[in-house]
Length: 170
Image (cartoon, rainbow, N blue to C red; front, side, top):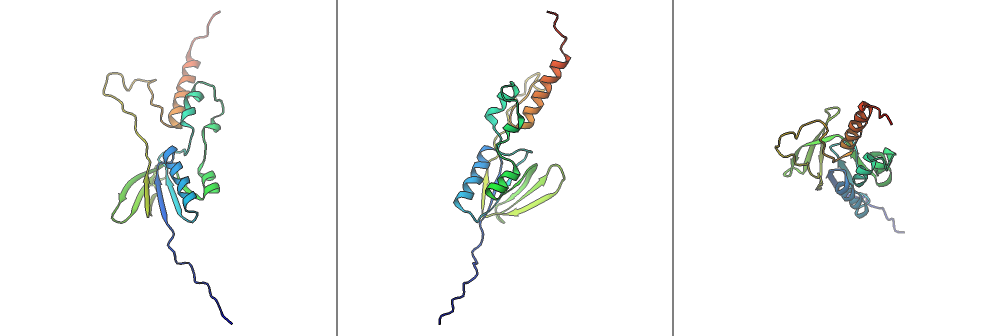
């Protein structure tokens, strides 16, 4: 009689950290999950929204899309439920230590510090709009459109201007 004892699996779980949670980062995290079902995946996003429909923002501002909820393709909760990805929003990465394979971020709402180790690091932070040093660049009503917060600010500004406009006398 042969007794076969299964050995505990001592394989180290792969840790993947993705910085940036919009198109590139969310896609990279989802692809990493498809390639490794057991990996520990942490996605850090600087703003409050992940995986949103950036191409739809002008249509929302113009009123062709009326449901803001349709702008969010995924949420932290849906990425956790569907793909087991740990999503942290409002995270500002403060340190990347490549010698120690660790990353540190600060929650911009609570001030809480998060330090995480990684085996693989994906940087998908996007870009900041260039604001040329020209007269009037900071005047009210001049916006950059990069995320849902920017979109909301534009819509709010437009609505305030409409409310302040004198009624037409037809």
